[in-house]
Image (tube, rainbow over all chains, first blue to last red; front, side, top):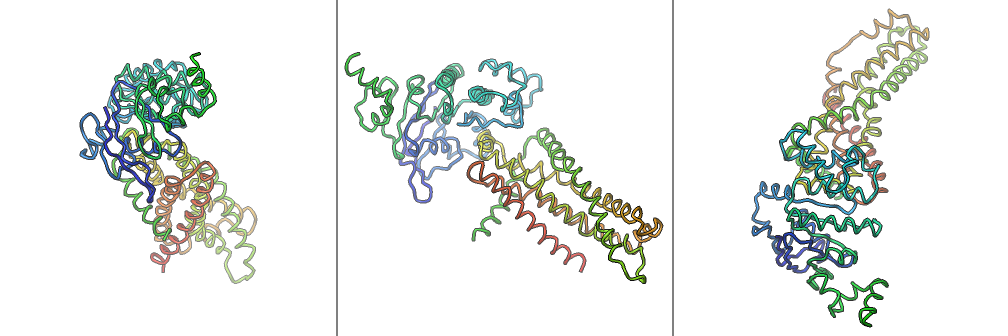
Length: 254
Length: 245
């Protein structure tokens, strides 16, 4: 579990996060939603340890990040998996090498054992036949799946996903969403997904934090978000015509 | 103020490069890759340039040698001195700032743009050490490239001067050995070593700290070439002043 308490962060006088309090549960996909510039990415970078918060604490399974020694911080990083918006695969490496990379860096196992683990994970994301290909030779959706495989190959405790569906067609986006959710349950990971994709919210929104202007404006789950009367949330959720029509249909009892 | 900040950032980067080390087996593999890419990959262009510039230096000297009182051996002497002292170490390094420097800046810059450096950091890897140290170690072999350049420059000079009929072979070889001072070789290789470090680190700095998208990667490569050349030229002047005057 990751707990964020009273988190503040500003850049050059601009206050980006204004006292965020939220608990990200283990074994659940925790979604952070909000408009561009609402502070979602900054919140995630604080949780990843890439930004130091101005005020507040982040607690990983009962231990505050600020109390960690450098060694503990490095160990914590090795328990984190990250799925970047663009995949961030190393383009000079094959799919197999990309997935093997975290294992090679942090374990002393033999290459055959590493390969076994790599193909076990690649099979899990249904890419066992693409090990020898380079990232440029596979589609965007496959690249995302390779990035997921790389993120989970070290059996992380925490998985962070930055807009995992951006640039993907609706079908592939759903495949990625479901894969993230399945892996979260299977590996009992604390998963944090940054998104503004409403389909993701419908698919995997087990716990949702809605940020607006750096403030936690609403929290709940997917069953509640479509019933809330909170205007800040409804303005965001029903901003697309499709969702507006769904809401109208619901109100008319269709 | 901006320049001072950049200089400070550059030295902090160097401190970071020698910080937490990457696993030795991975570092070794990366270093061999970089030697292949940066040094072995430059062999062709360096050989080509060195041979022809050596030939041109000999030709120019021969064509401008009108006074019958000046011995023909001067052609070989002048070619040797200019190749060993300046052409091979300095001129080739400036060409390398364009070839190797741009490659380093654009490859690291592209990794920055596509979040690959962030990925390394999130994994708990010292990205400065992982990306830059192999390049620094690889560039330790750069003096071998310059030694080849010196040899081929002299061969080029011999070919142009002797086969061109400007000087007999024995006179050329006599001129080549005339007043040879081995300290000049020390001077040439000492500054080559400094240039190698500049070639590995200045372009890395421009790539690592670049901001923006793919257009900025191109701009960073150009800026990197300009600044690497400037630093090489200034270092050349200081080293020459300190070691030869």
